[in-house]
Length: 275
Image 1 (cartoon, rainbow, N blue to C red):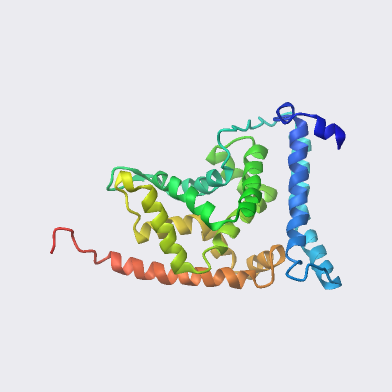
Image 2 (tube, rainbow, N blue to C red):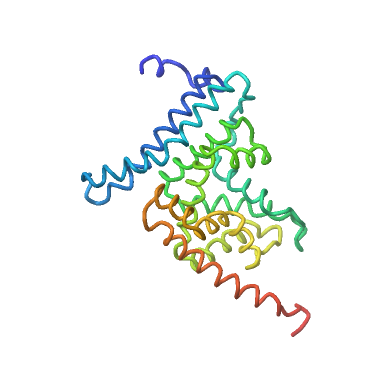
């Protein structure tokens, strides 16, 4: 511990030491996430709680193990990602990367590019939805993802999310936490659109209901697909809690009710010239 503390952070960035520290952090996060749900207001653990922790650790262990395998096999070959200290908000970068993967950029009537135009408001919304502690933890998850894959390129990220279960798990922690913040869906939707529109006021862009739906689906559609089958629901129950699939199902039910109504209304939009 003394040796670790005596090494300046700038001396280990981009080195094998940094890689091992990142893996250790991921290992700690897996154990912490498994333990956290067992402490409520009681602040004690029962034997049943301990058994549930053991079950969650068993289910998650292969995610961390793959980090060790990948790093050991490619340690000398990974083009290590150099952190830019001017860009501290890795979580917004990760969320925006998901938008770029799932939404084809296009010009909108105010002559700005969608979804790029929503980034500033998206950053604000993420900060609003999370506590400071949650933001720091999830931002560490996002930062680790970019540093581990050695790039912030969307194509590289998409490949790693598809092929690396460890990276996928850390990414899910970020997006599922944000998804849960839409529990009061209509109020949160209105807040989201308001924040986006405030951030884009100078450009003249105004987010429509259907554009909100496009953003929401781009971010969370994978988890709706997961709860459509028994295996997906089981994975979510094991990694989070038994009632987790039902909790997010309620959010998606509210979303698709809103989307259906928004799509219906959009078919009958009245021209601004008509009075």
